[in-house]
Amino acid sequence: MEKTSENEWIFKTVELPRMISVGNNLIDQAGKIMNKANLGKTGVLIADPITIKIAGETTIDSLEKSNFEMTQHLISSASIGESHEVEKVIKEYEADFAVAVGGGAVIDVTKYGSFLANVPFVSVPTVASHDGIASSRASLHKDNKKHSFTAHTPAIVIGDTSIINNAPFKFTLSGCGDVISNLTAVLDWELSHRLKGEAISSYASHLSRLTAQMVIEHRKEVYKGSPSVSDLVLKALVTSSMAMCIAGSSRPASGAEHMFSHALDELSASPALHGEQCGVGAILMMYLHNGDWKLIKDTLEEIGAPTTAKEMGIPDKDIITALTTAHTIRDRYTILGDTGLSQKAAEKLATKTGVID
Ligand SMILES: [Zn+2]
Image 1 (cartoon, rainbow, N blue to C red):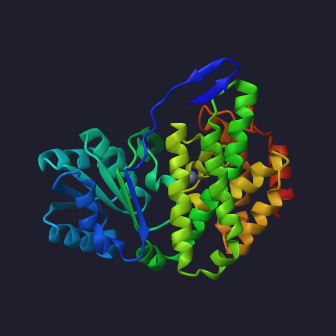
Image 2: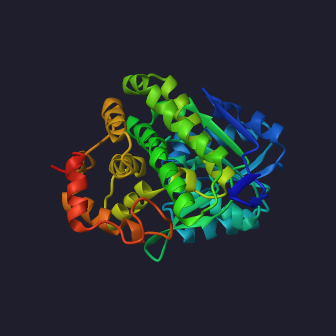
Image 3: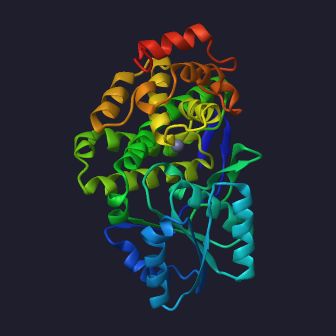
């Protein structure tokens, strides 16, 4: 129960994952985990041509050893059409559940497809690059534009750290950027609560901040890339997802820095990773909030994540355009206000923070 304003209390239902397993060589245990969860015995495993080799086939083996009847379906992009295909396969096969083995695209396509087919899904991330692995929203392309769709939260999350350890480290660093950007997302939420009376959950906002602090506190270990980092980042991403589940929206983990990242996605044919852009966005938005933007910049630098346009491979002019248009990305009140930044203000902001020269 959360207090929204002086005299108003809201009651709501929070949907969270039922089981979260994070550990080494866990997909070998997928059958045992799924038996415990009791979701039924027939499943469809969704992957892409790469992730089926990385972890999909091992997951199917493990499930079949535990007497699950499995079929597989491969996808090639994060589009709404792929989600409809997944829905069709689940229904044709009369599957009790779906298993997503892959990165953001596979998880988002399965999340929405299983939601449409009304069966639970299991999230098995092969990279720890963003906090969608346990959240209820799916980001999918429709008519050449990315949209965020209401779906459902995974029933089970199996975070196998040995798989994450084998993925390129820049994905894990991107996950760190996504989690650190919670700091500005929460400030935007609090601002909107004060100025627009938007409902806020102090539980969700505290949890969201806590995950960012976890990564900041352990930045030296992240830099070293020790195996324990996968465990830390996976847990931080799942916790960040849970803050969104509690809030019932992406608010605790998505503010102006995410709108800036989405604006960059629309501008560029080959944008940087989501968490890389959100991390740089958090430096910029924290400057506007008059908060400790240097801590964000120093942390990203220290762990080896990009802090400049050049390091992200994005032209300076795109940074400025994204800053001046970010407020139009969605109807969400943030530090950018209703009218956004002027060209001049955007240039000053990007230069002062060292994001552009
Ligand atoms: Zn994000």
